[in-house]
Image (tube, rainbow, N blue to C red; front, side, top):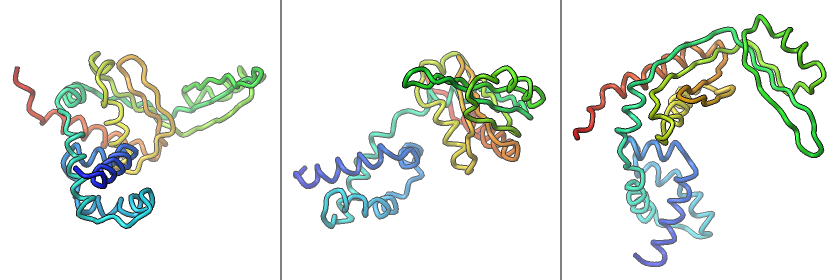
Length: 207
């Protein structure tokens, strides 16, 4: 590989590494290599400060594809064993206190009905944010999720692909909790259900 080819490959790799949607399309083999090369060409030209041959970019993207061919089976197995529950009509409150140059803050998620009570408890704190009309979607997964990378991002990507905004999220032991607007809870539930359902269709790895 020539110096120029190495430079193009390095630039392409950097751009793909900074965009989860590019990585996902390559890993799950639905990426149009030529279309992706054309999409990122302006960035490559700007970074390299020269006009880059499109065929060289296509070749570099094809080489980069091998970096994202890691087996989906460990993640798929965990997703397939996951279940979902939903809690509607919740609120979120973030409060904090300034300590020297740092702001110590905490976020609480609770039933909408007790919002006034919670605000009263934190009357001497700075209220950073209050959001109502939310729903909490809780994905319950097997214990293996704790040490398996890529599971949480699979949930987030699934919601992003459906253009669903995540208002807040937290991982707690084997649970992945996502807050969305009540208006999005139906779409979000179906999106995650589809992900789990499709994961159950992937054949299990033979030992």
